Image (cartoon, rainbow, N blue to C red; front, side):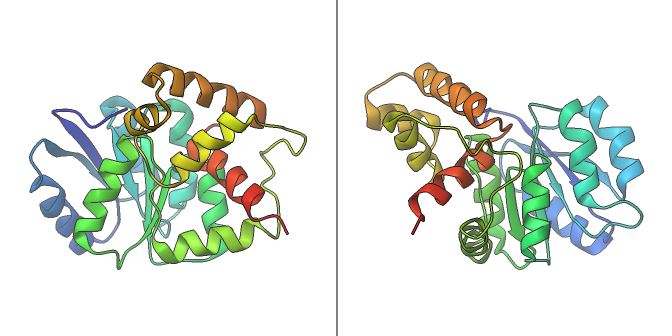
Length: 217
């Protein structure tokens, strides 16, 4: 979805200091509202399907079941909600696990406050925000191994690869449409076909396929 007049954001974070800081930061932005602050997996699974936030920021290292488990459970229940991992970990396995269960972005907790707000806006516009360190890790790791969810026999058209190229830069659907002189609905149609061909569920996974293709030796 694109950023609208009212954007609801939920937090899954067991540290009260961090969640309080994020709440103040996010609610300082006009039109942004914190709809829930969940402290663990059980709390999130109980609250969020009912509240249907536009964006969820979740830590990975929660007490009990992890933030990745939260996304794995909640994404099928909230297909229109965007999930951003906000964590201290830059481990490549955790990054790929998060992306494979449906997270759309991955930020380190040391990300500057303005960049966190930018990431929320970007994910609402169809982008896949990542800290620069994470983006480099993804490119390096993905060049060495293939995501299990992507069909290795899939072949995309030049136009589909072009759209993924623009998406990998964080461009909005409208900007992609304007650049290619097509409608936003045509962009969405191309992306639906891309997802179907690659057997993926998110723009992030599709972008990973694109990064692998352009980084082939």
